[in-house]
Image (cartoon, rainbow, N blue to C red; front, side, top):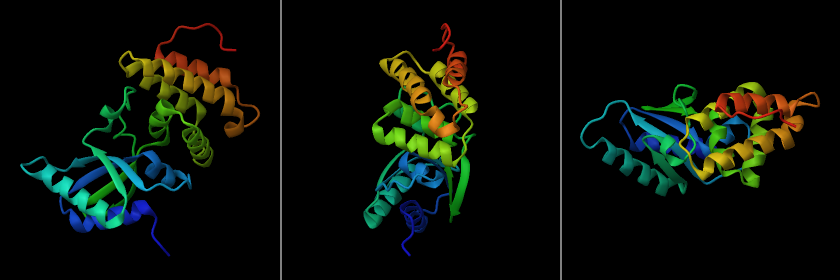
Length: 206
């Protein structure tokens, strides 16, 4: 049986890279680990060497390029993926969960609530389906999710994406909340939690 793309990629990378590193998966690769079966030919992550020294990033970049060619899997990486968007990923490293180790490579996945920040920022139809699938399968707490998203919004610098992010979160809880968390789910409660953590002063949510 063919190995999953993420597993195949890091198994190959472990042969190319002997530097001890930590990897923090996000995007479709992390979603696949959480239970989203939508296939993807790319892997997005933060990568952190155990120690910084001259030439370490040349070694990492070279190993990633060779692995990408060998596996046919596109890779996008950064030392800190918090710089990828206008919405803060907060302390995503501390909230990550261990997937497995491949040689000197420790692969971790962002916690679902932190992984979701990027999905809410973009909010395409495929992102919405990914969010709904993962939250349901992982039994993600709606209140903790709302609080995390609110803190992320509060931490972010003013931009058009902040306003869009707020709209996306409010729409998701209102439109999909009961489908994920059941008929007794009250969208207004989660949206108020989101507003409170984001520092948004609003009246009652309808």
